[in-house]
Amino acid sequence: MKNIVTLSLLFCIIVSFTTPVVATDATNSAAPDTNKAKQIEELKERLATKVAELRQTQRKAMFGNVKSVSLTSITIETKTKDVKIELSDAVTVIDSADGKRTKLTLDDIKNGTIVSIFGEYDPSLDLLKAKAIIIQKEPPSRVSGTVNAIDKKEYTITLTNTAGPTYIVDIERTTKTMMWAKEKGLYKGGFSKVEIGNTIFVTGTAVPKKENRVSAIRILDIGNLSGVTPTTTPTPTP
Image 1 (tube, one colour):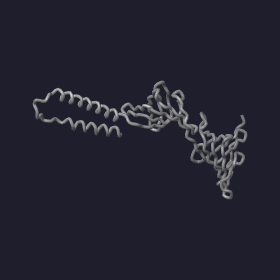
Image 2 (image 1 turned 120 degrees about the vertical axis):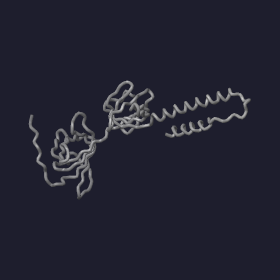
Image 3 (image 1 turned 90 degrees about the vertical axis):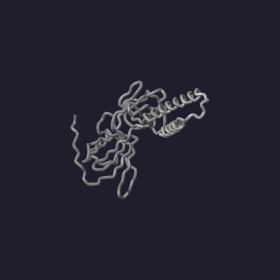
């Protein structure tokens, strides 16, 4: 935006200095004046072209999932629409998924990758010319509900709630569980201490290709709020 303003002001200044002046000396040579006027006109044309180019493109950032990948472009799916991203060898690719910035290449961008892209956007073509691509960590899934079933062999918890679907929560070795009780407050818990009827809040990641299933990162168990143990539905034996 500053570039456009600066060039526009310069353009106006040049125009102001090209206002015709009545000649007072007929003996002056017309050739130098003609060349000077031609140079000024050429400069005005170049400035006008540059201003038009800067107005046509604008710096922009976009966030979304990679929908398709080709040698020269990718298409990302944003919240509102699909946008084509133009690629070049000068694009910087950075992975920040693990909290550390690691430099990658365009070959590391795959379908389903979550990315933030910075570049020059051309609204007339609905095209973003990428300058930098940052691979993002998948946003965490957050689910909550009442524990309806516990599978101690598979290390899973089944959650139900009245406002949404039933979820299966996978307990991992790295899952951190905290418990809360009125008498104790917040304290460290574990999978073995979770009971049917308890209300829990889960932060985790969606399990690929498995609907309504979450791999738990953190669990907060606030106990049985209703005092009633729900009736579980027995799993049929195969």
